[in-house]
Each structure stands twice: as structure tokens, then as C-alpha cells.
Image 1: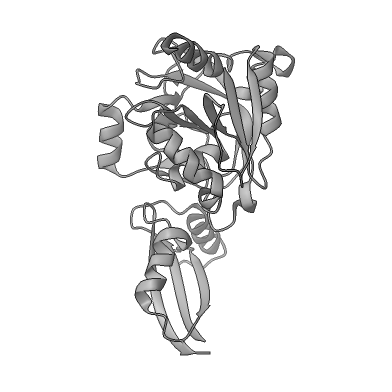
Image 2: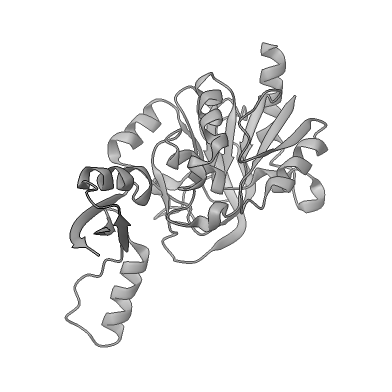
Length: 231
Length: 80
């Protein structure tokens, strides 16, 4: 199992992802944003950071990096793609996932552990039982997920809402539990097929227990098991 | 050179946190007459003479604005 981690100018979480994947005993390599060859990779990761300085809108320029045309083709063939934080923003800008990520409602950069509730979804990246609560750090200024009502209905109906912000006991606070104002407390969504997954929290930071937790391990092991079983 | 000015604003119904904050701040400063503040982007574009507004619209749809959350208005301001 080999993960390809894309490096855009301004990415800053790619080493964390590579460390997490190797910690779990799998292979990972870097893909430069100007490369157009994804051969040899089983899964693609768009990491967090500030690609192209977040100019115009977060992810708006990265979306046109040469590598992205290949990432779109990889995803269309059913290849697993995960976008974490800035990677999630890039996936929405590239229209691989619906909606957009706006500035946090509180106008503050949020950087803290977040409780997330796993929802019943078609996401291939996660096979934790629905209702499981995990603690994964968030670290962003534009994590306020928004989409129109029709899209939200579609996301709910198709099982595309993968993660919601919640309280540590798994409940939702009155007025919502999202630290950023996200619509319907959405922290992560996937496409209809379940192979493309975008989330604001950083699972790679809670893989090695040295960094404060292991709840992020499931975000990398499930897809590996799935790929191994499909052969 | 032909010049265009582009105004990008959030679509109706999309919460604009910087605008809402400026609105509250103005009211706190005693400007009770303030009812609403919306903050957007202003872009000056210089292009080759004869560039049609449809081309500029394409640039907006592709990169300068995100049609999922933003509206834009293009004004032609003539030759530079």
C-alpha cells in the first residue's frame, strides 16, 4: 500500500502525513504539484497548509496545478483521494466535492482538539461504526462548510456526510458544536461513490501516540485494508 | 489595453463574517443608522484591446469568483 502525498507550494502538513503513514507500516511518497504521473500510488492525499498563500480563495489556485488534472482522473477511475484541511478546500474548488469552505464565523483561526461523530456514510476511507466519537485536532481559518439546501439534502440522502463536530459525549450542543460555524456541523464529506473524502480536522496528527492520540489511525488503515481485500 | 472592474460579493444568504463584524463595530461606534455591511473583493483587470466581456465572465467563473458562494459584477471602464 503506497500513499502519494501531493506537495503544493505552501503545503505544510505533508511531512506529518508521510510520517503517519510510515508509522502505520505503509509506504508513502511525495508528489510535486507540477508532476503529472501518479503511477505506483494506491491512494492520493492532498495535505493541509496554505497552498499558493491562500490567494484569491483557499485552494482556488492549487486546483489548477498540473497534478490536479491527474488527481481528477484518478478519482474518476475510483481511486481513493483524501483532502485534509487545505486539501478539502482544494477538492471543493476542483468540484470533486460539493459546497465550499468559508471563513470561520468567529473570525478566529481555530486550533484545538475537536470531537467528531462518525456518521453512517458510504465513505471508503473510514469503517468505524456510526456514532463513534473520535478526537482529532482542527487547525484552520476557513473551515466553515457551506452548501445550498438541495446539496445538503443530497449529501444526507446519499450518506455523504462522514463526520460531524459534536460534544465529547457524541451529542450536538444547542446551536451546534462546530468550532467554525459549519453548516449542519459538517466536518467531513465524501462523494457519492465514497472514494473521495474531504475533512477539515487533521487525522495525521493523532496517529503516532507521541503527538497526543491515536484516533487518526483508522483514517489511514481502513482504505489500506479495503485496497488489500480488493487486490 | 481594455480595462474591466470586477466586484465579487457573497451570494445572498451566505453569511459574511467580516461584514457582520464591521457592522457590529460601526454600531458600537455610535453609527446607529448602519443596517448592513457586506465586504467583498474588487479586482482591476487589464486585457488586450477587443477582449469581449464573455471572456472576462469565463475568467470569473473559472478562477476569480467561486459561483458556489459568490456573485460578481463586471464593469467595462474602457481603454487604459
